[in-house]
Image (cartoon, rainbow, N blue to C red):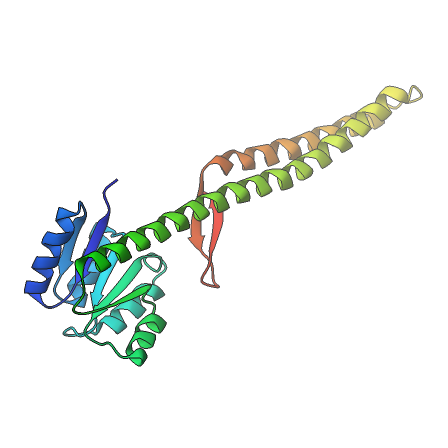
Length: 217
């Protein structure tokens, strides 16, 4: 499986060198020299890992990370901030802005590769959790629907048994009314079954609290 890394840094020489190193390691690598182009490239290539510099023209890496993490579509992207800022307050500021990891320049390539692999493992785990959440939600929906479908069917069965056992019913109107009720109950059950048909095709959508919810497509 190919993994895509997006580098957003205004140092063209650094970006070229880093691209070469990452491509040798088997990554698909793309880049941008400023945050505006970086955002467009992120939307185009949907990267697994984003490497972001702090000091850039037009917008700082901190501001870019905040925008990414505030976006419903891109907030789950794994971001490693790469910068010459090395103070504790700088690291705290970067992580508080939403960076998932922080690497000081200059750095050893092996250390960067290890952090990228760690980020990919985290992304993979998050995807597995998301899929399990979908399956569990589908199961809960199915169990809830079972109860709802069972109610009208059980009621229809009761009416049917009453008709079978009540030999004294001679009024055709009573019989027709009871059959009409049974028909309505069975229609209700069929409608519930039809609503359940999309349950095998679920998608996640953003919820108001910043989390996600599962809904049939």
